[in-house]
Picture: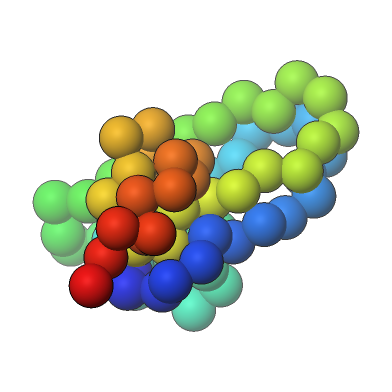
Length: 74
């Protein structure tokens, strides 16, 4: 997951599964590509409609959400 900007998406309430392995063909959402690896998707409960920023660089201290860590990459 070496992208320089987060995935900014509008989410509806419900359970969301965000990719943690970087192999999904539907990033930032999990598509099950992690199967057979040590990775598990990030499970997140969204309680109200809102826009979220999902980390794409893997360096956020708030995974799966972006904290701006990508801005410090060289």
